[in-house]
Picture 1: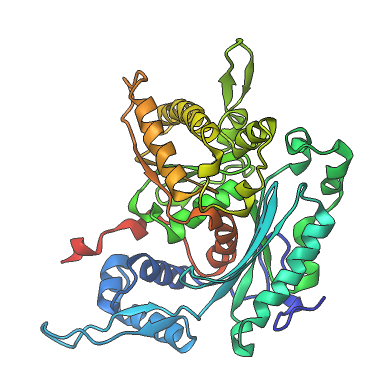
Picture 2: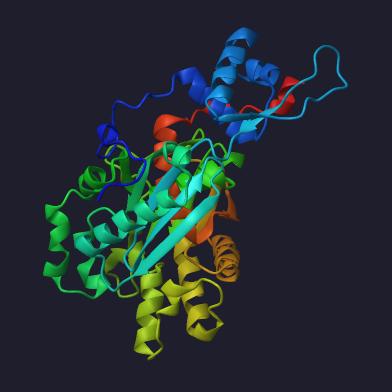
Length: 407
C-alpha cells in the first residue's frame, strides 16, 4: 500500500539517522522557543539564546521561506525599528500518531501546533498485530488524503505509542496466551515503515502521553514532574529539566509495576489496583456492560456506586505512589491524566490529595497535584510528537527561561 505523497527513501524504522535533513541545533532551538512562548521577535530570541541578531535573522528568514514560521503584525511604540513577532505556521509541519491500546487503537493527524486535524479509532477485545497493522495503514492513507498535495510533503513521520511486551498481559486482557504470541514475531514499526514510506518512531504509550503533556499541555509550566496516565493499565512518565526521561531501556516511569502490599500480606503491582482494568472487571462481575469505558469518556454516572468505590481505591494507591516517587526525585508537580471523563479525573485528583494528607510526609516536599489537559488523546498525540521532536524540536532547560526576565 503506497501512501500518497510519501517518500520511500526516507523510511527509518524506529527512528535514527536518515536521508531527511535533520534540523541543526540552533534551528531546533529557535523553533522550540517560538513554540514554547507562542510568539517571539528576533531580538527576544537573540537574548534568550545568546546568539547574534544576525544569526537569528538568517535562521528565521530561512524558516519563514520554508513555511515553518509566520510573520506577525509589527509592534510599534518602542525606540528603534518595530518589533515583528514570529510564530509557528500551523500547516508548516504535520505528523501522524498511533496509539495501540489494550482495548482500542487510535490514529491522529496533528499540525505543528498540536491541533488534531483527523482522528479515527478501532475498538477490539484483543490487540492482534494483523488487524492493528491493517487499521494503521488504512488510517495513514486517510490522513494523507485530508491534506493538499504540497502539505503531504510536510508530514514529519509516524509515531507509535504502544505498551511494551503486550504478550505479557494476556491474563488481564482475558484472552488465550497463544493469541498474543504474534507480537513476539513481528517488528511492527518496520512493517509500518515498509508500507507507508515515512520515518517511523516508537515509544512506550505512557511515556508518549507524558511527552504530549509536556509539548502541548501544561507540562511546560514545570521544570520537573511525575506524569500518571490512567488507562486500561496505569502507566507513567518522568520529566526532569523540561525533558522526558525515557530511561536506558524506555521503561522509566513504569509505575504500573510498582509493588503494592495486599490486605492478605501478599505483594502485587499498582497496575492491579489503580487501572481501568479493575473497574472493567468489577462492572462485569455486577453484570454491567463495561463497553462504555472504551467507547465514550463523556459520562460514567451509570457506573455508580461502583465507580465511587474504584475512585476511592485508586486514590489511596496513587497517594502512596506519589509519596514514594517524591522520595526518589524531588518532583515539582504530579500531573494526572487518563482515558477518563473530566469529572472523574477531577474526583480522582481531589481524593488523591486527601489521601496524601493522611500519610507521613516528613522528609519530602509535597508536590502540586494537578490535572493533565491533553486528555484521552494523549497517547496518540504523544506518538505524533515523536517525529516532531526527532526533526524539529528539542527538550532543553534553556527553553524554560522566562521572556519577562529579559526586560
